[in-house]
Image (cartoon, rainbow, N blue to C red; front, side):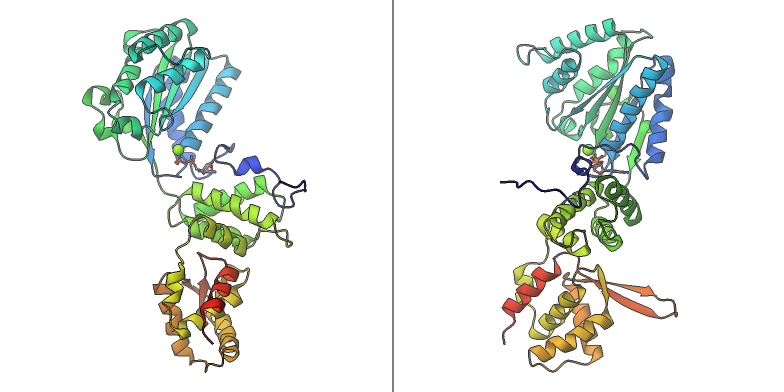
Length: 387
Ligand code: ADP
Ligand code: MG
Protein backbone atom coordinates (compact mmCIF):
# COMPACT_ATOMS: atom_id res chain seq x y z
CA UNK A 1 0.00 0.00 0.00
CA UNK A 2 2.78 2.47 0.91
CA UNK A 3 5.29 1.85 -1.81
CA UNK A 4 8.88 1.90 -0.83
CA UNK A 5 10.41 5.09 -2.14
CA UNK A 6 12.88 7.57 -0.94
CA UNK A 7 11.51 10.90 0.15
CA UNK A 8 12.95 13.85 -1.69
CA UNK A 9 11.63 16.64 0.51
CA UNK A 10 11.13 15.39 4.06
CA UNK A 11 14.33 14.61 5.91
CA UNK A 12 12.83 13.92 9.33
CA UNK A 13 9.06 13.67 9.55
CA UNK A 14 8.99 13.36 13.34
CA UNK A 15 10.05 16.96 13.58
CA UNK A 16 6.81 17.97 11.86
CA UNK A 17 4.62 16.29 14.48
CA UNK A 18 2.90 18.17 17.31
CA UNK A 19 4.69 16.14 19.95
CA UNK A 20 8.11 17.27 18.84
CA UNK A 21 9.57 19.88 21.16
CA UNK A 22 12.35 21.93 19.57
CA UNK A 23 15.53 22.63 21.53
CA UNK A 24 14.94 26.35 21.26
CA UNK A 25 11.59 28.09 21.11
CA UNK A 26 12.00 31.35 19.24
CA UNK A 27 10.00 34.34 20.44
CA UNK A 28 9.29 32.68 23.76
CA UNK A 29 12.48 33.84 25.46
CA UNK A 30 10.58 36.16 27.77
CA UNK A 31 8.18 33.46 29.01
CA UNK A 32 11.07 31.05 29.41
CA UNK A 33 13.04 33.49 31.52
CA UNK A 34 10.01 34.22 33.71
CA UNK A 35 9.66 30.48 34.34
CA UNK A 36 13.35 30.32 35.25
CA UNK A 37 13.01 33.25 37.60
CA UNK A 38 9.98 31.70 39.33
CA UNK A 39 11.53 28.26 39.68
CA UNK A 40 15.01 29.25 40.81
CA UNK A 41 14.01 28.89 44.51
CA UNK A 42 12.54 25.47 43.76
CA UNK A 43 15.81 24.42 42.25
CA UNK A 44 18.16 26.03 44.71
CA UNK A 45 16.27 25.87 47.98
CA UNK A 46 13.69 23.14 47.51
CA UNK A 47 10.85 25.58 47.92
CA UNK A 48 7.61 25.08 46.10
CA UNK A 49 6.20 27.40 43.52
CA UNK A 50 3.09 27.73 41.41
CA UNK A 51 2.80 29.24 37.99
CA UNK A 52 -0.12 29.84 35.76
CA UNK A 53 0.40 29.76 32.01
CA UNK A 54 -2.31 31.16 29.79
CA UNK A 55 -2.88 31.95 26.11
CA UNK A 56 -4.92 30.88 23.13
CA UNK A 57 -4.39 27.70 21.15
CA UNK A 58 -1.08 27.22 19.35
CA UNK A 59 0.79 29.95 21.20
CA UNK A 60 3.44 27.49 22.41
CA UNK A 61 2.27 26.97 25.99
CA UNK A 62 2.71 23.19 26.10
CA UNK A 63 5.93 23.21 24.10
CA UNK A 64 7.51 25.94 26.23
CA UNK A 65 6.61 24.28 29.54
CA UNK A 66 7.84 20.90 28.29
CA UNK A 67 11.11 22.44 27.16
CA UNK A 68 11.47 24.23 30.47
CA UNK A 69 10.84 21.10 32.56
CA UNK A 70 13.17 18.94 30.48
CA UNK A 71 15.94 21.55 30.62
CA UNK A 72 15.52 21.98 34.37
CA UNK A 73 15.70 18.24 34.96
CA UNK A 74 18.80 17.93 32.78
CA UNK A 75 20.45 20.75 34.67
CA UNK A 76 19.45 19.17 38.00
CA UNK A 77 21.08 15.90 36.96
CA UNK A 78 24.30 17.77 36.17
CA UNK A 79 24.27 19.52 39.53
CA UNK A 80 23.21 16.48 41.53
CA UNK A 81 19.87 17.97 42.52
CA UNK A 82 17.02 15.43 42.43
CA UNK A 83 14.30 16.94 40.33
CA UNK A 84 11.39 15.35 38.58
CA UNK A 85 8.34 16.43 36.66
CA UNK A 86 5.15 14.95 35.37
CA UNK A 87 2.87 16.41 32.74
CA UNK A 88 -0.79 15.46 32.82
CA UNK A 89 -3.05 16.36 29.95
CA UNK A 90 -6.37 17.04 31.64
CA UNK A 91 -8.31 16.66 28.42
CA UNK A 92 -7.29 13.02 28.31
CA UNK A 93 -7.58 12.53 32.09
CA UNK A 94 -10.56 14.65 32.83
CA UNK A 95 -11.43 13.61 36.36
CA UNK A 96 -9.64 14.27 39.64
CA UNK A 97 -8.99 10.57 40.13
CA UNK A 98 -7.69 10.25 36.57
CA UNK A 99 -5.21 13.07 37.09
CA UNK A 100 -3.94 11.75 40.43
CA UNK A 101 -3.64 8.27 38.99
CA UNK A 102 -1.42 9.51 36.19
CA UNK A 103 0.84 11.31 38.66
CA UNK A 104 0.98 8.16 40.82
CA UNK A 105 1.81 6.00 37.84
CA UNK A 106 4.79 8.20 37.17
CA UNK A 107 6.31 6.84 40.39
CA UNK A 108 4.68 3.44 40.45
CA UNK A 109 3.91 2.21 36.94
CA UNK A 110 2.03 -0.78 38.30
CA UNK A 111 -0.46 1.13 40.43
CA UNK A 112 -3.91 -0.42 39.75
CA UNK A 113 -6.23 1.84 37.80
CA UNK A 114 -9.30 1.10 39.87
CA UNK A 115 -10.32 0.31 43.40
CA UNK A 116 -8.96 3.48 45.01
CA UNK A 117 -10.68 6.75 45.69
CA UNK A 118 -9.10 10.09 44.91
CA UNK A 119 -8.31 10.85 48.60
CA UNK A 120 -6.72 7.40 49.02
CA UNK A 121 -4.54 7.93 45.99
CA UNK A 122 -3.55 11.38 47.21
CA UNK A 123 -2.39 9.82 50.48
CA UNK A 124 -0.33 7.24 48.61
CA UNK A 125 1.17 10.02 46.51
CA UNK A 126 2.14 11.96 49.61
CA UNK A 127 3.86 8.92 51.06
CA UNK A 128 5.75 8.38 47.83
CA UNK A 129 6.83 12.01 47.70
CA UNK A 130 8.09 11.80 51.25
CA UNK A 131 10.19 8.72 50.70
CA UNK A 132 11.59 9.83 47.36
CA UNK A 133 12.87 13.16 48.55
CA UNK A 134 12.61 14.80 45.17
CA UNK A 135 11.51 18.17 44.00
CA UNK A 136 8.52 17.44 41.87
CA UNK A 137 6.86 19.72 39.35
CA UNK A 138 3.34 18.70 38.40
CA UNK A 139 2.10 20.24 35.18
CA UNK A 140 -1.63 20.23 34.61
CA UNK A 141 -2.02 20.97 30.91
CA UNK A 142 -5.42 21.99 29.52
CA UNK A 143 -6.55 22.60 33.07
CA UNK A 144 -9.58 24.54 31.77
CA UNK A 145 -11.39 21.25 31.61
CA UNK A 146 -10.80 20.36 35.24
CA UNK A 147 -11.89 23.79 36.34
CA UNK A 148 -15.00 23.78 34.20
CA UNK A 149 -15.89 20.46 35.76
CA UNK A 150 -15.43 22.00 39.17
CA UNK A 151 -12.50 19.81 40.02
CA UNK A 152 -10.60 22.70 41.59
CA UNK A 153 -10.34 20.84 44.85
CA UNK A 154 -7.61 18.72 43.37
CA UNK A 155 -5.55 21.81 42.58
CA UNK A 156 -6.09 22.92 46.13
CA UNK A 157 -5.07 19.56 47.56
CA UNK A 158 -1.94 19.36 45.49
CA UNK A 159 -0.94 22.90 46.31
CA UNK A 160 -1.28 22.11 50.02
CA UNK A 161 1.16 19.23 49.98
CA UNK A 162 3.94 21.51 51.08
CA UNK A 163 2.16 23.15 53.96
CA UNK A 164 1.66 19.81 55.62
CA UNK A 165 5.03 18.30 54.94
CA UNK A 166 7.74 20.76 55.61
CA UNK A 167 10.74 19.00 54.35
CA UNK A 168 13.48 20.74 52.47
CA UNK A 169 14.47 17.89 50.24
CA UNK A 170 11.07 17.22 48.76
CA UNK A 171 8.55 19.68 47.46
CA UNK A 172 5.67 19.79 45.06
CA UNK A 173 5.36 22.66 42.63
CA UNK A 174 2.68 23.19 40.07
CA UNK A 175 2.28 24.69 36.66
CA UNK A 176 -1.26 25.13 35.43
CA UNK A 177 -1.75 25.62 31.71
CA UNK A 178 -5.07 26.87 30.40
CA UNK A 179 -6.51 28.63 27.43
CA UNK A 180 -8.79 31.02 29.16
CA UNK A 181 -8.23 33.21 32.08
CA UNK A 182 -9.43 30.72 34.67
CA UNK A 183 -7.99 32.13 37.85
CA UNK A 184 -11.33 33.73 38.60
CA UNK A 185 -12.98 30.33 38.85
CA UNK A 186 -10.50 28.98 41.37
CA UNK A 187 -11.72 29.50 44.92
CA UNK A 188 -9.91 31.92 47.15
CA UNK A 189 -8.18 29.30 49.30
CA UNK A 190 -6.23 27.78 46.43
CA UNK A 191 -5.98 31.14 44.76
CA UNK A 192 -3.74 32.32 47.55
CA UNK A 193 -1.09 29.88 46.39
CA UNK A 194 -1.62 30.80 42.76
CA UNK A 195 -0.42 34.32 43.08
CA UNK A 196 -1.69 36.42 40.29
CA UNK A 197 1.77 37.75 39.69
CA UNK A 198 2.83 34.27 38.67
CA UNK A 199 0.69 34.41 35.56
CA UNK A 200 2.68 34.01 32.36
CA UNK A 201 0.88 35.15 29.28
CA UNK A 202 1.39 33.76 25.80
CA UNK A 203 0.18 36.15 23.14
CA UNK A 204 -0.78 35.17 19.62
CA UNK A 205 2.18 34.98 17.28
CA UNK A 206 2.60 37.75 14.74
CA UNK A 207 3.09 37.01 11.07
CA UNK A 208 6.85 37.54 11.30
CA UNK A 209 7.17 35.36 14.39
CA UNK A 210 5.27 32.59 12.62
CA UNK A 211 7.57 32.97 9.66
CA UNK A 212 10.61 32.43 11.88
CA UNK A 213 9.01 29.37 13.51
CA UNK A 214 8.13 27.82 10.15
CA UNK A 215 11.52 28.63 8.62
CA UNK A 216 13.43 27.03 11.51
CA UNK A 217 11.15 23.98 11.51
CA UNK A 218 11.55 23.60 7.74
CA UNK A 219 15.34 23.72 8.12
CA UNK A 220 15.17 20.98 10.74
CA UNK A 221 12.74 18.67 9.00
CA UNK A 222 13.26 19.14 5.25
CA UNK A 223 16.25 18.64 2.99
CA UNK A 224 18.05 21.90 2.17
CA UNK A 225 16.43 24.16 -0.43
CA UNK A 226 13.25 22.10 -0.70
CA UNK A 227 10.83 24.84 0.23
CA UNK A 228 10.65 28.14 -1.58
CA UNK A 229 10.88 31.35 0.39
CA UNK A 230 7.52 32.61 -0.81
CA UNK A 231 5.91 29.33 0.28
CA UNK A 232 7.21 29.97 3.80
CA UNK A 233 5.82 33.53 3.51
CA UNK A 234 2.44 32.20 2.48
CA UNK A 235 2.27 29.76 5.41
CA UNK A 236 3.05 32.66 7.76
CA UNK A 237 0.44 34.89 6.08
CA UNK A 238 -2.29 32.28 6.29
CA UNK A 239 -1.67 31.25 9.88
CA UNK A 240 -1.24 34.82 11.11
CA UNK A 241 -5.01 35.16 10.98
CA UNK A 242 -5.07 33.02 14.12
CA UNK A 243 -1.54 33.61 15.39
CA UNK A 244 -1.41 29.86 15.80
CA UNK A 245 1.89 27.98 15.44
CA UNK A 246 0.08 24.64 15.47
CA UNK A 247 -1.81 25.61 12.33
CA UNK A 248 1.41 26.87 10.73
CA UNK A 249 3.28 23.64 11.39
CA UNK A 250 0.35 21.54 10.25
CA UNK A 251 0.36 23.52 7.01
CA UNK A 252 4.11 23.00 6.62
CA UNK A 253 3.70 19.28 7.23
CA UNK A 254 0.86 18.83 4.76
CA UNK A 255 2.50 21.06 2.13
CA UNK A 256 5.66 18.97 2.34
CA UNK A 257 3.64 15.77 1.95
CA UNK A 258 1.86 17.23 -1.08
CA UNK A 259 5.23 18.13 -2.54
CA UNK A 260 6.55 14.58 -2.12
CA UNK A 261 3.92 13.35 -4.55
CA UNK A 262 4.89 15.73 -7.32
CA UNK A 263 7.61 15.69 -9.91
CA UNK A 264 8.97 19.15 -9.09
CA UNK A 265 10.40 17.84 -5.83
CA UNK A 266 9.99 21.06 -3.90
CA UNK A 267 7.37 22.88 -1.88
CA UNK A 268 5.93 25.93 -3.64
CA UNK A 269 3.04 28.24 -2.79
CA UNK A 270 0.79 25.92 -4.78
CA UNK A 271 1.38 23.02 -2.37
CA UNK A 272 0.64 25.39 0.50
CA UNK A 273 -2.68 26.32 -1.07
CA UNK A 274 -3.49 22.64 -1.63
CA UNK A 275 -2.62 21.89 1.98
CA UNK A 276 -4.76 24.73 3.19
CA UNK A 277 -7.65 23.58 1.03
CA UNK A 278 -7.30 20.21 2.73
CA UNK A 279 -7.48 21.74 6.17
CA UNK A 280 -9.87 24.54 5.62
CA UNK A 281 -11.35 26.22 2.59
CA UNK A 282 -13.66 29.21 2.52
CA UNK A 283 -14.03 29.10 -1.21
CA UNK A 284 -17.21 27.20 -1.73
CA UNK A 285 -18.66 26.11 -5.01
CA UNK A 286 -21.70 28.27 -4.37
CA UNK A 287 -19.53 31.33 -3.91
CA UNK A 288 -18.12 30.77 -7.38
CA UNK A 289 -21.51 30.05 -8.89
CA UNK A 290 -22.77 33.39 -7.58
CA UNK A 291 -20.23 35.33 -9.62
CA UNK A 292 -21.29 36.83 -12.96
CA UNK A 293 -19.34 36.14 -16.15
CA UNK A 294 -17.05 39.17 -15.87
CA UNK A 295 -15.99 38.26 -12.35
CA UNK A 296 -15.52 34.61 -13.31
CA UNK A 297 -13.24 35.58 -16.18
CA UNK A 298 -11.26 37.90 -13.94
CA UNK A 299 -10.83 35.17 -11.34
CA UNK A 300 -9.87 32.63 -13.99
CA UNK A 301 -7.21 35.04 -15.23
CA UNK A 302 -5.85 35.37 -11.68
CA UNK A 303 -5.84 31.60 -11.14
CA UNK A 304 -4.06 30.95 -14.43
CA UNK A 305 -1.40 33.58 -13.98
CA UNK A 306 -0.59 32.92 -10.32
CA UNK A 307 0.28 29.22 -10.93
CA UNK A 308 2.73 28.17 -8.21
CA UNK A 309 3.61 31.67 -7.04
CA UNK A 310 2.37 33.23 -3.82
CA UNK A 311 1.55 36.62 -5.35
CA UNK A 312 1.10 38.23 -8.73
CA UNK A 313 0.75 41.88 -9.66
CA UNK A 314 -2.58 43.19 -10.91
CA UNK A 315 -0.71 44.08 -14.12
CA UNK A 316 0.21 40.44 -14.74
CA UNK A 317 -3.35 39.34 -13.96
CA UNK A 318 -4.77 41.94 -16.34
CA UNK A 319 -2.58 40.69 -19.21
CA UNK A 320 -3.88 37.16 -18.70
CA UNK A 321 -7.38 38.59 -18.42
CA UNK A 322 -7.05 39.86 -22.01
CA UNK A 323 -6.09 36.38 -23.20
CA UNK A 324 -8.91 34.73 -21.25
CA UNK A 325 -11.51 37.13 -22.70
CA UNK A 326 -10.30 36.38 -26.19
CA UNK A 327 -10.57 32.65 -25.53
CA UNK A 328 -14.19 33.05 -24.40
CA UNK A 329 -15.04 35.58 -27.14
CA UNK A 330 -15.75 38.35 -24.67
CA UNK A 331 -14.64 41.95 -24.98
CA UNK A 332 -12.07 42.70 -22.30
CA UNK A 333 -13.18 45.56 -20.05
CA UNK A 334 -11.11 48.68 -19.47
CA UNK A 335 -8.51 48.87 -16.72
CA UNK A 336 -10.72 50.72 -14.20
CA UNK A 337 -13.46 48.15 -14.67
CA UNK A 338 -11.03 45.26 -14.27
CA UNK A 339 -9.84 46.93 -11.08
CA UNK A 340 -13.35 47.00 -9.61
CA UNK A 341 -13.74 43.28 -10.41
CA UNK A 342 -10.56 42.60 -8.45
CA UNK A 343 -11.88 44.60 -5.52
CA UNK A 344 -15.22 42.78 -5.63
CA UNK A 345 -13.43 39.43 -5.54
CA UNK A 346 -11.49 40.57 -2.52
CA UNK A 347 -14.70 41.67 -0.78
CA UNK A 348 -16.20 38.24 -1.30
CA UNK A 349 -13.14 36.71 0.35
CA UNK A 350 -11.86 34.68 -2.59
CA UNK A 351 -8.66 36.64 -3.12
CA UNK A 352 -6.66 39.04 -1.01
CA UNK A 353 -4.70 42.05 -2.19
CA UNK A 354 -1.84 43.96 -0.68
CA UNK A 355 -0.25 47.21 -1.85
CA UNK A 356 3.53 47.51 -1.70
CA UNK A 357 5.87 50.34 -2.59
CA UNK A 358 8.48 49.66 -5.26
CA UNK A 359 12.03 50.94 -5.80
CA UNK A 360 10.87 53.76 -8.10
CA UNK A 361 8.51 55.14 -5.48
CA UNK A 362 5.42 53.75 -7.19
CA UNK A 363 2.86 51.46 -5.62
CA UNK A 364 2.00 48.03 -6.90
CA UNK A 365 -0.97 45.90 -5.94
CA UNK A 366 -0.30 42.23 -5.45
CA UNK A 367 -2.99 39.59 -5.55
CA UNK A 368 -2.83 36.46 -3.44
CA UNK A 369 -5.00 33.36 -3.50
CA UNK A 370 -4.96 32.15 0.06
CA UNK A 371 -7.63 29.47 0.19
CA UNK A 372 -7.58 27.28 -2.86
CA UNK A 373 -4.96 25.83 -5.19
CA UNK A 374 -4.86 27.84 -8.40
CA UNK A 375 -5.26 24.71 -10.53
CA UNK A 376 -8.35 23.57 -8.64
CA UNK A 377 -9.86 27.03 -8.92
CA UNK A 378 -9.08 27.27 -12.63
CA UNK A 379 -10.67 23.86 -13.32
CA UNK A 380 -13.76 24.71 -11.30
CA UNK A 381 -14.19 27.98 -13.18
CA UNK A 382 -13.65 26.37 -16.57
CA UNK A 383 -16.39 23.90 -15.65
CA UNK A 384 -18.94 26.52 -14.70
CA UNK A 385 -18.28 29.26 -17.28
CA UNK A 386 -20.95 28.94 -19.96
CA UNK A 387 -19.77 29.41 -23.48
P1 ADP B 1 -0.41 25.43 22.84
O1 ADP B 1 -0.08 24.45 23.92
O2 ADP B 1 -0.29 26.85 23.27
O3 ADP B 1 -1.73 25.16 22.18
P2 ADP B 1 1.81 24.17 21.54
O4 ADP B 1 2.87 24.38 22.54
O5 ADP B 1 1.20 22.82 21.47
O6 ADP B 1 0.68 25.27 21.68
O7 ADP B 1 2.40 24.57 20.12
C1 ADP B 1 1.78 24.14 18.91
C2 ADP B 1 2.83 23.68 17.93
O8 ADP B 1 3.65 24.77 17.54
C3 ADP B 1 3.77 22.64 18.49
O9 ADP B 1 4.09 21.73 17.46
C4 ADP B 1 5.00 23.43 18.89
O10 ADP B 1 6.17 22.66 18.80
C5 ADP B 1 5.02 24.56 17.88
N1 ADP B 1 5.52 25.79 18.45
C6 ADP B 1 4.83 26.66 19.23
N2 ADP B 1 5.60 27.71 19.57
C7 ADP B 1 6.81 27.50 18.98
C8 ADP B 1 8.03 28.25 18.95
N3 ADP B 1 8.14 29.42 19.58
N4 ADP B 1 9.06 27.75 18.25
C9 ADP B 1 8.94 26.57 17.61
N5 ADP B 1 7.83 25.82 17.60
C10 ADP B 1 6.75 26.27 18.27
MG1 MG C 1 -1.21 22.87 24.64
